[in-house]
Length: 335
Image 1 (tube, one colour):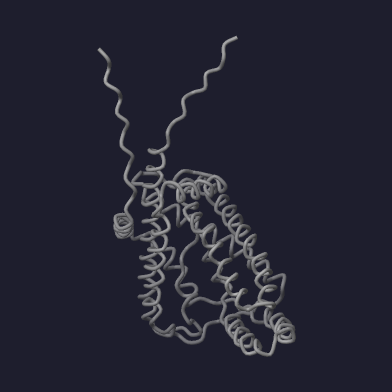
Image 2 (cartoon, one colour; image 1 turned 180 degrees about the horizontal axis):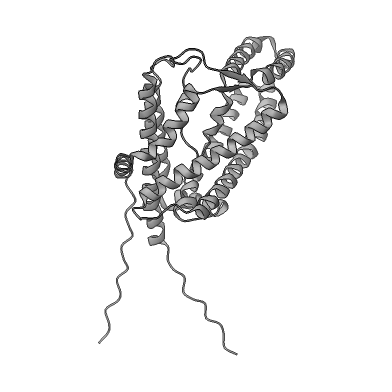
């Protein structure tokens, strides 16, 4: 009598976008302490002292402006002037402390998106950075602190989303920080690898044919998005599966391209939801205490979205593991 063949287990269904979002909001509501870091960072950027960069960057911008206007064609002068005016305005309003909010792993902040030239108690205290070396040093320091805060923030949300009682571990937190720094530098290098040659090529083609140059510019942007978006799940692998930066990048690409076709849709949905509500949160003037309500709403929404991303990513990893066929062991020939 022949034994019945073993049934192959059915593959797990793809994780749903809406259930992941609902679960993320439930996690944020059940762990209100998770919003403390975003609220405190936004309060610092809104009400605290600021570091200005106008004194250092304005002379450099003037030098660049002069050369750009000399090289620009008559039909391009107006567009160049408009772009330079916008850049000058951005420099005059930029708060160097906002570098504490890093990407892709970082504490989200609302106030850099808002017009914060004033506060409810008057003009803020602005200290201008006095030189190029201090500017570079402060930039590196603030980004490193931002990585550290982001690692703590993502780690806390990851522990809440795994439904496992895992106490905070200093060694694990240090490892997360190192891998987050490595991941950020790898993503930056990849972006530069595409954008720098692309920008040079677009500039050369635009001189010959502006129409072809615009088409090529859109193609470079599309290529950059096509490369980067599948990698945005990489930080989650660092915190949930203790991967290193390179493994997390490769795993994110493989997961999104071969096992999780709705991954891009999840990222787009989360981005539309977060950025769309940011327009609501920034409606109050910075001189009004009502902006504090927007800061609270922003902190809760982004914490919920990060938690939803952890839920969605864990579901995708289970799908990938269930659909991978284990390879039979290789038998060594006997001598």
